[in-house]
Structures are given as C-alpha cells and as structure tokens.
Length: 188
Image 1 (cartoon, rainbow, N blue to C red):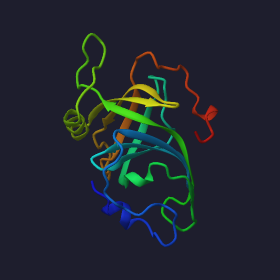
Image 2: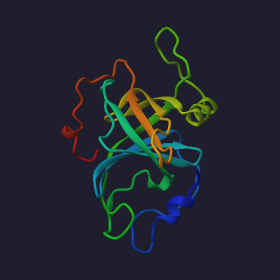
Image 3: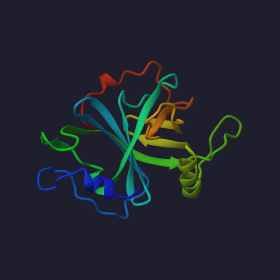
C-alpha cells in the first residue's frame, strides 16, 4: 500500500503525527492504539514490509473467540507511528486523542493447523496469507496474547471499498471469556 495515502490525508505543519518515511523497523512488532476520534475505536497495527499495516477496529480487539470484530483496513502508517501518543488537533484527519493500549511482537503462523495447533510460519507465508485474505498470526503483548486471524470479507454491498476484515481470536490457552475491553482503559 505504501505511505502515499498516509501523507495525502495529513497536514504535518498542524499535527504531531510523524511524517511518512519507509524504514527498516525493529522486527515484527504490533501496537494497538486507543483512538478517541469522532467515534472511539482501536487502531491495530502490524509491522510488516517497512510499514505498519493498519486496521481500525470499532469495538477493539478481543480475547474471546466468540467476538468477531469488524476491522476496517486503513492506510499504512510509518514505523515511527509505533509509539505515537498525543492529541491530533481539531480540523485534522483523525482529530482526537491517541493512546498506546498494547504493544508487543507478532509472528506469522502456518496457513494450516496440525493436530489443532498452528505452527510458526514464515514472512513469505504471512505476505501470501494477507494477500489471500486469510491471515493467521500469534501475538505476544502486554494485554493481547495468543493466536488470531484477520479474515477479509467479500464486498457485499454496493459502494463497498473492500476494506472490511474480521479480527478473530483463535481457541488457545490465552482465551478470556467474556472479554471486557473497557476494563483496560489506560496506556500501557
């Protein structure tokens, strides 16, 4: 996707957000940012291919496999956005407060389970699964842990941009049922 869309949507003379820059990151990190904009949502970002691949998750991620969370794919963000917290001023794209809700590392999982368990995968498999729209990965965070999937939904309504995904927690030892995201309302 690149960072052109990220740059086009922002006025960097007015916002504290970092300017776009492709960069070699520190590895396979993830961040979840609680973003109180027009509507509260959570930005889920995976460091991949020199950028942060990004999804806006209206209800936030969950550790309960019964919760299938809508995740709208948004423009890639620069790796320097990883630890961004602050207030995006009124009148700017995404105006509101951004808080780091969770951080950690992620690893790709193999596309197929063996004996009910997903094994570690490769970056090549991760890129192929993301492109295919059935992306499995494991998170090692302060709040989110275990196996997850991002599943691309087929455009079902006229005018759909095809950016709709589902973020789903897989059944594993890190399940929390029920999961109340509102009980975690502080920065980590």
